[in-house]
Image 1 (cartoon, rainbow, N blue to C red):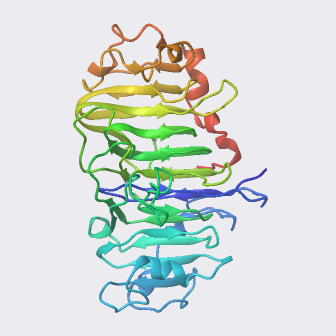
Image 2: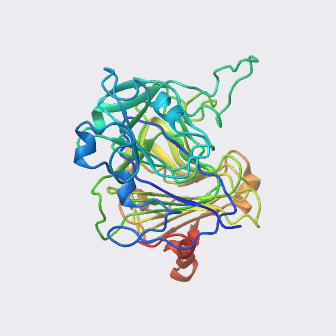
Image 3: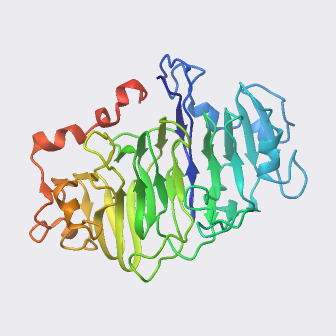
Length: 387
């Protein structure tokens, strides 16, 4: 099945993020980015920007480049809340709609449903840190039937629609801890020059994802941040937290998240873990590849934990500060997973990369072993990335 692809170009500070997309049977014909031609089935860089004349007062629907809906808390725009602006987009929408959010703190839980594709959420230039969508959902919150909503439905900002993109917005969650920041749930993802912060399993899921630093500069010159503000004191706290959720709620699909300054930053008070792969079958092609990433922060952290029995995580050419537990990897308290998990390192450097005390079942990879994880072929990038 051919799947639609999203570019999620975000500035997110002090935040948790939910990003998702769903599959359709639409045929993908190819995409070009930057100054090149863009197929209308894809997201372009232009979809992340609003022209200066529209920023200066044009109402929704005026001017070229798609409809613009202005959100302003003082009532000077088309909507006072982000969710109200989303609700103004018709179901079955088939053209780009740009929601321009004026600076301010918008305390609301936002959902972009599957019926409203082609939405861009855009903050004013230079105002990312003062344009904030803030909420406080937790997995332990109760629904109308009195049941805990769980991790999957606790995201503060939820995107289910296709061809969504965002730029210049801070997504903030008011939480007690920073466990499980980014739910990299399923599908194929490209995290390009990002900053991701958390404490316990702050990248988790069953996706096939490449986290990479670029050697080139792309426009617009922004960076992605997925960030939580506090850490828990105990290492493996129960799952009463908010999180960022990435990828399909229903079927396998593809997301590209791209910007600058890729770093994995741990904020553990004592102990933590960076990645928790949920891969649970040898036939499952999921796993996380961290390529040329910088690992910084506090506490002592595992590089990865075997959430699934066949968890797969690889770090290549990464620079690791001295915040990595010498053993490096955890079997999730189940020694049998040490026989099936696939955890590896290749040509990493820094104090945290010292492999002399790694668990005996961790892999120090040769080039041939690491090669499948060293470029976009790991995520079938030739099928949906053209950068």
